[in-house]
Length: 428
Ligand code: GLC
Image 1: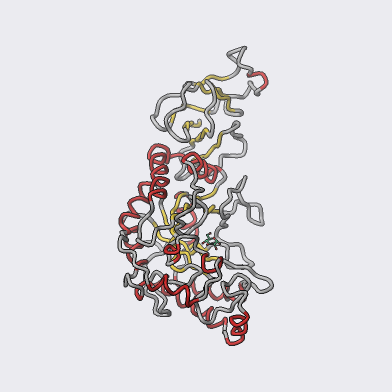
Image 2: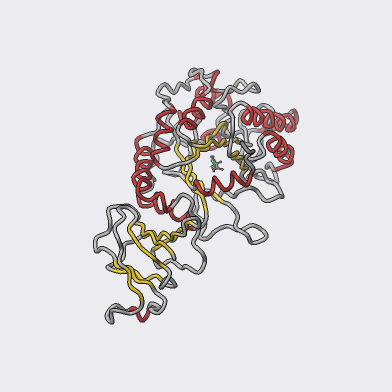
């Protein structure tokens, strides 16, 4: 088989459009944000209880993978290590890992195997930040930032040892788990009392990565000068596609949460509604982006009921509408979507997808599409949508709505029973 290139990965990944982010670590036990060590300025000694009692007895990665697959997700990115420093795999370079916690399992290995078995591709999130490693200096976002004592110990720390530790661990991740498609580093905060590419030795790290798996996609958070493989807007949706310096489209992936935090947060009440969840996916793809939707499993090793409900929302919608997502991109600029609507476009099949964030009454006028559409149907049930061109109804107010070039679609009065209805337009 031919070697997969970076371009191949980008193509596959952009066609896939929808992935699952998984944030899992010992912070799931605190169940009040994955930054808890920082927010509450907890020292290593007091944080140790989360390691000593970490025992996800209901851990069933096959169940996770089945839910992800049903939701329509084609890849996943899991926190091999988050800022707390705890490693989900049996790394040779630390004792602070799942195999030494009460569960005594290489959790990462099992998750990777289960997702692969469902045909879901693999990505690793790796935290550049490490609030546990002995050589990682206390800085402005460190849990011990206000401790004079901890600060004075900085002089005995050697950041280059930590940078080497990261290269060693990333080498493990790219050697012991087979073919990896995505590496997701998090994150740089250069400047005073912060950390950037010189601290991480990002250039060297990139060399290591490219020498091991040249095709792997690497995100934008290493503080490098060169343009990244993709950008990662976090918890916001850009209002238009992103661009490279030369003006060409920049691959991007928005990362979003169901309820605000990334790790499991028991008492959060800000869970997104089904409409918001679907609209978010549609908004990302209609602007040429991917959506990486996050789940924070509980410390028993399960997706909690609210996450499952949200994932089922995706599954229910994707079952009927995934054709407007996979292989799709922003529509050509000459097609301007009507109010409350979003277009996506599949260049291979030459089909345009019209998504309704609000359901209009009786008809919709599509500017610039007269003479360009062969056939139109509702995607969820393949029922024909009748079309007419030009002004045929003097009472419809079409004169204000560029009647000449508009294509009018006749819609059912009642909104179809899908969170976001889609009409599939077969272009000539
Ligand atoms: C942030 C946070 C973090 C989360 C990440 C996901 O940078 O530090 O907790 O993992 O975003 O994008």
